[in-house]
Amino acid sequence: MSPAEPGPGATPDAGAAAGGGAGSPSLPDDLAVHLVRHGRPLVDPSRPPSTWSLDPEHLDGVRTLRASGALPLGARWVSSAEPKARETAAVLTDSPVAVDGALGEQARPAGWLDDYAVRIHRSLVAQESPAAPGWETAASTRARVVDAVHRQAESAAQEGATDLVLVGHGTAWTLLVSALTGRPVDLYAWERLQLPDTCSLAGGELVRRWGSWRS
Image (cartoon, rainbow, N blue to C red; front, top):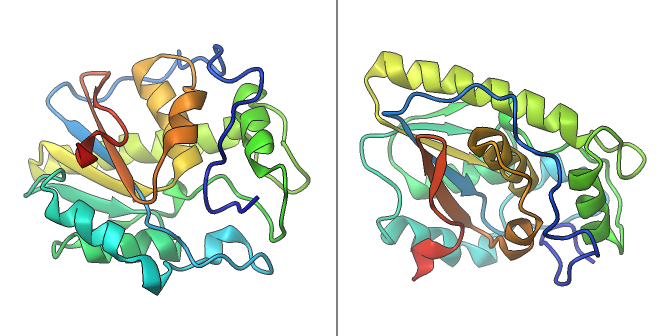
């Protein structure tokens, strides 16, 4: 199975309480956070996923997201440093986009795993353990991304922005939503993620679910 997309079919643990989100300080109530998952990448198993670029033949999805009006005007924009995230942000907005390397996806080495989706599920459930050799643990990813988002929220407040758009990655965002809402990781939501996709949070709640912008 390609690591570019979440796979169909849940493991027996899917939908169960996994990696509860308690313990993360809340963001300002007047700040809406809009998470964007990057567009479809050009998969090259010989290189680490963190180096992949967008697939130039599948940019229509990103352009459709821009045209949908789902993302706010006048927001602070921040992207992961990974090429596929930065390239997605460049298609989505003409505004300046800051880059924060700490918003990167769960680190994984080059290679191909036929049981990729199963490994992701395992990682999200047993967050302290690497799901495969060379994988960053979900606990490390979560801590890194949560710290980065709070730092970016402070920058947004200093700029007087009430919207923060973060362009990044599916597993990292799944862990972040859990942390910011104080709820268990939603494995079913991870399975349904599209390329690209977006959701929004405000006041510690998920106010727009993944995929709803297509409705």
